[in-house]
Image 1 (cartoon, rainbow, N blue to C red):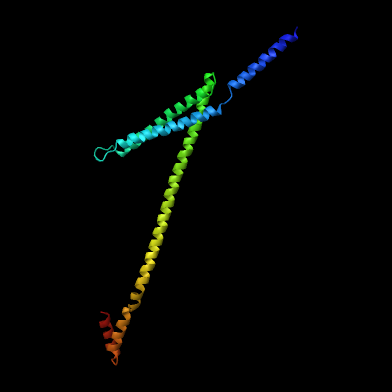
Image 2 (cartoon, one colour):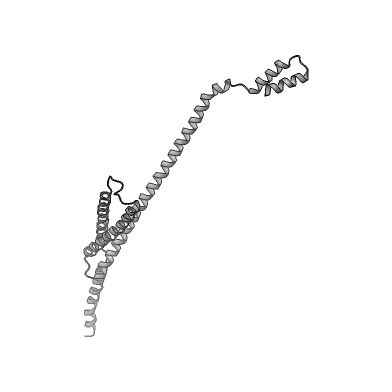
Length: 200
C-alpha cells in the first residue's frame, strides 16, 4: 500500500510540469503580429500628423507658424505616436499569446515592443545613412564636376590666349632697340643719356 500513493502523485507532478511549460512558452506569432500592428499604427499616426502639419501651412507667410514650432510639434507627435502604437501592438500581442496568466501576456507585449523598437531604429538609421551617403556623393560629384569645369575653363582660356600672348613682345626689347639706334656712333655719355631717356 505504500507504493500506490507514490504512483498516484507522479502523474500529477508530470501534468503540473507540462502545464507550467505550456503557460510559459513564448508565442512568437503573437509577438510578430503585435510588432507588425505597432509599426503600421505608427505609420498611420505619422501620416496623420504630416497631414495636420501640412494643413497648418498656408500660402500667406505671415499666417504660418515658425519653423521651430513645427519641428518641436513634429518631434512630440513622433514620440507620442510611437508610444501609442507600441501600446496597441503590446496589447494585441498579449491577447494573441493565449496565456491566461497576466504576467505572461504582459511579457509578450514587452517583447513585441522591443521588436518594434529595434525595427524602427534600424529603419531610422538606414534612412539617415542613405540621406548622409546621398548628400556626400552629391557633394563629391558636384565638387568633381566643378573641379573639371574649372580645370577645363583654365585650359580653354590658356589655349585661347596662347596666340595673343605669343604676339606680345618683351617691353625691354623696344627700349634696347631705341637706345641702340640713338647711341649709334655717339660717345658713351651720350649713349647713357639716351638710355635714361628711353627708360623714362
